[in-house]
Image (cartoon, rainbow, N blue to C red; front, top):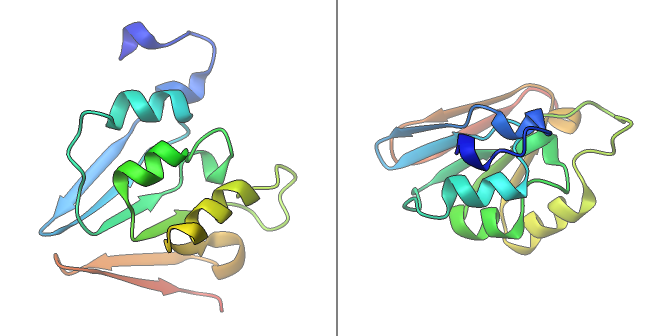
Length: 129
C-alpha cells in the first residue's frame, strides 16, 4: 500500500483495524478516503454481521458506495460533534445508509455508543436518547 500513497493526504495512511469475534466483525478504518477504501477492501472477503465505524467521521470523500456495497454493514457508527462546522456526517453518506437499511448510530445525537458482540450479533447501546 505504501507505494500507492500520494504523500499528500496524511489521512490516507490511517491505521485500519478489523476485529472478528465468532460470526461478528468490526472495522475501524480511520480517516481513509474512497481511493484507499478500494485498495484495502477490494480483494478481502466480506465479513459477516458487520459493525463499521465510519471512515473520516462520515465525510462524503469517504464511506463510498463501493465500501458500503462491499462490506454490507449492519450497523454504522459516526463519531462526530454536535453541530460541527464540517457538516458531518455528510447527508450523502446518511442517504446511502438509509437506502441500504444500515442501522445508523451517531455520537452527536446518541452520545456515547457501546457495541457488544456475543459472537453472533451486535447489541448497540446509546447513552443519550
